Amino acid sequence: MHDTEQILQTGESSELVELGTVPHFTPLQERPIIAVLVGIHFIHIMDFMMLLPLGPQLMKLFELTPQEFSLLISIHAFSAGVFSFFASFIIDHYDRKSFLIFLCSGIGLATLLCALSFDYYLLLLARMVAGGFSGVLSATIFTIIADVTPAHRRGNATGTVMSAFSAVAVFGMPFGILLVNLFSWRAPFLFLTLVSIVMTVLAIGLLPSLRTHLRYRQQHHPAQHLRTIFYNRNHLYAFALIAMLMFAGFSVSPFITTYMITNIGMSEVDIPYLYFCGGLATFYTARLFGKLSDRHGKHKIFTIAAALSVFPILMITHLSTASAVLAITVSTLFMMLVSGRFVPAMALVTASVTPRLRGSFLSFNISIQQLSAGIASLFAGSIMSTTATGAIIHYDTVGVIAAVATVLSILLALRVHALPE
Image 1 (cartoon, rainbow, N blue to C red):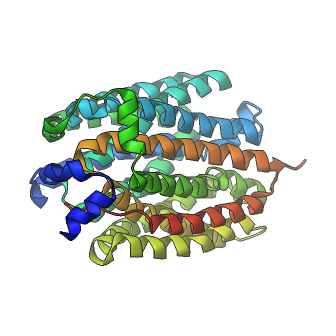
Image 2 (spheres, rainbow, N blue to C red; image 1 turned 90 degrees about the vertical axis):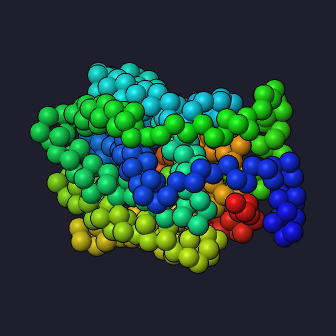
Image 3 (spheres, one colour; image 1 turned 30 degrees about the horizontal axis):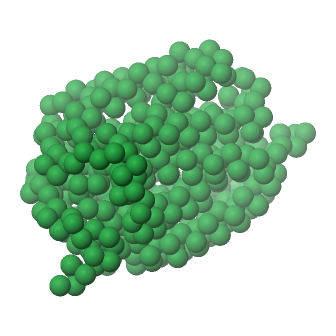
C-alpha cells in the first residue's frame, strides 16, 4: 500500500503495470554488458576531457581568449543538450542495442572530424558534431544501466560505468598528452576514432537485444509527451538536481589545467600526473560511492559526498602559489568528491522515473545536464579574465558560486523520490 501511495503521489498511477519491466539478468550476465558500457563511456568522457589539457596549447596556436576557449567547451555541451532534447522523442522507439551502436559509430566519425580541423572555426564545428552524438550516447548508456540492473545493484553498476572517468584520467589523458607531445594535438582524437571502431564491434558482438521497453511504448503527440515528462514534480526536482550539480562542477573544472599552469606555475610536463593521481583515486572511490549508496541509501551518501566536495572546490579556486605536490593533492580531492557525488545522484535520478519513460526522461536529463554545463563554462569564462602576464583572475569568485550551487543541490536531492521496483 505504501508503494502504491508513493507512485500516486508522484503522478504515475497508470504505471503500476510497468514495475516488472526490468529484465532478469543475473550478475554474471550483466558483466559483459557493463564492460561494453564502460568502454563506450570511456570514449564519451575522453572526447570531452581531452580538450581541457589542450587549453594552453590551443589558446596559443589559435590566439584564443578565455571566452573563446570556453566557447569550445560550451559548444560541445550546448550541442549535446539540443540533440538530447530532440532525441528524447524517439529514443524509446528503438532497440537500445541498435541505438547505442549507431551513436558509438557517430562519435567515432565526430572525433575524426576534430582531428582533421585546421582552424578554430572548423574545430568549433567539429566539437558541435561530437557534442550532438555524445549527449545522446550518455543518455542511452544510463538508460541501459537502469534497464538491465535491479534497483539494489544499480548504484554499484552506475559507479562501475562511471569509473570510466578514472580510466580516462589514469590512462586516457596521460596517453593522450603523450600523443600530443610526440605528434600533435590531433593525435588523441585519431586515437578515439580507433577506439570507437573497436567498441562498436564489441557492442555488436556482446550486447543482447534490449527491447522490453517497446512493449509499453505508446504513440503520443510531442506536446503530450512533454507534458508527461515535465508535469511530474518528481521529474522536475530530478532535473533541477542534475542542473545544479553540473553548474557547480563545470564552472570550475574546464579551467583547472590552464589555472595550474598560468597561476600556480605547474609545468606542462606535470599535467599528466594531475589527471593520473585524480583518476587513480576516483577508480576506487566511484565504485565505493556506488556500493555505499546501495547499502546506506542514495540520499544519505549524496549529501555526505556533496557537502565534502565544497572544500576542494574552494581550495582549488583559491590557490595562489603552491608546490606541484599540493596542487596535485587538491585536484585529486576535487576529482574524487565532485565525480563521486555524481554516482548516488545519477542512481537516484534513474530511479525517479518509471521504465516506459526512462529513455526519454534520461535523454531530457542529459539535455538539461549538458546545457547546464555549457552555461556554467560560459558564465565562468565571462567572470574571469587574464592579466598582461597571462594569469587568470577571479577564479576564486567562480569557486564561491560553485560552492553555493553545491549546497543548493543537497536541498534539491531531498525532494527527489525513488520509485519502487
